[in-house]
Length: 116
Image (cartoon, rainbow, N blue to C red; front, side, top):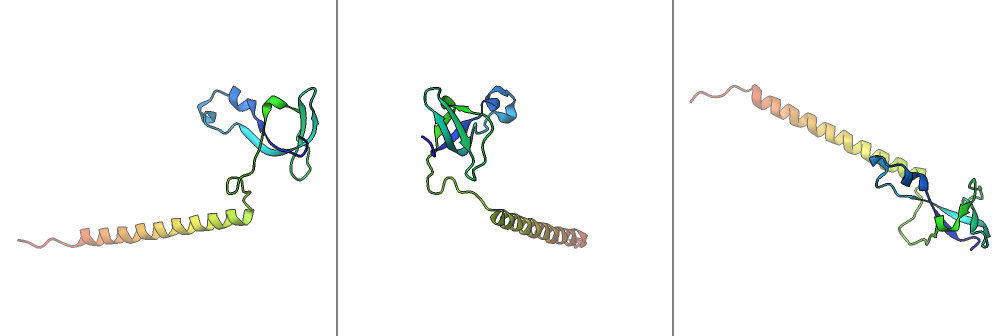
């Protein structure tokens, strides 16, 4: 099981009974198994860059992570900036549309009604 990719269960979220955490995903990771003690059922995990995760994990708090195409893809900061720029552009265009709509509504109400 060494070098396997796993998810770690976060028991702290389950103990917190607030409604804000009711539907929060309770699995952290994925991590890579660095060392495994099968007799005790304890595992030492590491990040993919080699950084150790503090503490040890019991085997019943881990589940194997299977990477599937399109489900787990890390997002680069460049992509996040592009998404933010697109959202800002959409908001600006919506504000311009609202301003134009407001001008049209104002021009309609300022004209006097013809007498019948």
